Length: 375
Ligand SMILES: C[S@@+](CC[C@H](N)C(=O)[O-])C[C@H]1O[C@@H](n2cnc3c(N)ncnc32)[C@H](O)[C@@H]1O
View 1 (cartoon, rainbow, N blue to C red):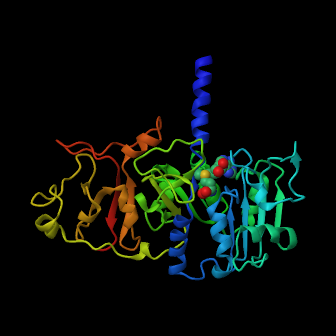
View 2 (cartoon, rainbow, N blue to C red):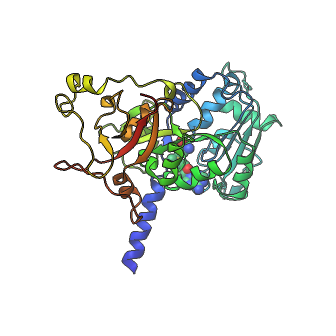
View 3 (tube, rainbow, N blue to C red):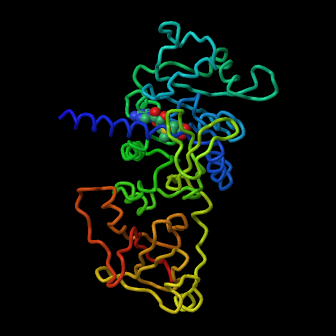
């Protein structure tokens, strides 16, 4: 029992630990600007809520504050999470503030809410920075900074009340609560732009939204998100882990992506493709050139091991790698299903459909089953 308790604790600790990955400013900027390029009025007159964000750490808060007027935001709401290891660690940035209760001379750890309605260069140093936000919060009655009653859990009543006031939720939520997070956004019919792990696509609830074109990928995957800032206590792992010029500890991953229901230009660009005959003659992939396409033994579809090898003129169902979703244009293709191997990894213990097979070949890992809309 004791051993089990310890391993449970470890598992929990690992789980909690894996939630503290902070998004870099450049990655937020690159993604959000893509929506603005598609529609410069995306945020005009809108309320953005970052509901897993400590403003002292969050580059989501920073991006929206620094670009508040340029993008025409009406309001930015941010709430922090009390159990986070960084909660209230940088309150000195905001100086003395009557809203911060003190415990033994130190700021008492609370979850906080920030409601920003206007921004401006208050200290007159020629630029707008977080210092101005601090001064503004003190002076400007239009903005609000107050401790929350609870822990700032995105599922709490007070966070949900703020959610109801928001048009968009834009954040990197805790990965361990991703299903609940996206479920809540759908339940409250919110527009969102959030970061998830590639595995999240294969969650039944997420995949069915992707299939119905209610949710799609942002403008890139793989190394599109260049890395996350991690706390001191985190191990710097991976070949691309680094410490940046500001001393931030960065771990790079290639398994994260943006999930959204905001429109962007990339998803309307058709994927340029060759016909089946041309693929067989000219494909750069050895398994296709001169050989052609295999049919699955147990599903009426052909196996396409590479997205760029999708034939333009095949009118049946095709099994393509998950990375296809990065090129998915809903006017060009229809999503039929997802192959179960992926489910079996992330949905252990649940009944799963049959694994796709091809005689004499290793089972394909993860496949999305698609069809051309028109040939
Ligand atoms: C992946 S980190 C990202 C932080 C920040 N959004 C960013 O992108 O830099 C997720 C954050 O959510 C916080 N968190 C964990 N559980 C939460 C919950 N139930 N409600 C709100 N925030 C939570 C964690 O403390 C952590 O700081």
